[in-house]
Length: 122
Image (tube, rainbow, N blue to C red):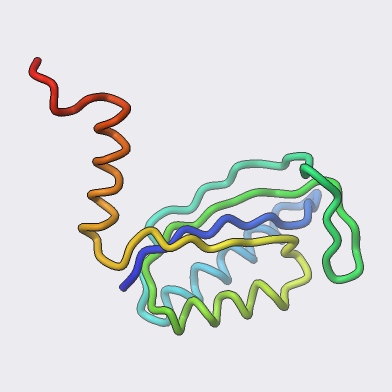
């Protein structure tokens, strides 16, 4: 199964139960279809770089969160459909990190190698 990372910007609500429910719904969709959710990160409430209009409502602040997961392309299409219809979602994007775990691990090692020079002698 390919590995993906999704970044989602949602409307800001005073109660976080709305965001929690959306994250739970997204993660359960992936897991119910046989996928694996590897990581969830909440980045907090931030001012948007520009006003965003979605479902006839304009917003200037939003809650940012990410989800790393492994799933099939068919399940990913279903997840995109959920995000498209949900009025809490302002924007989302899904990046493919690789189709095999070796590809993802090699890319991580390459990034670390350039930053920390892991091949140098101690």
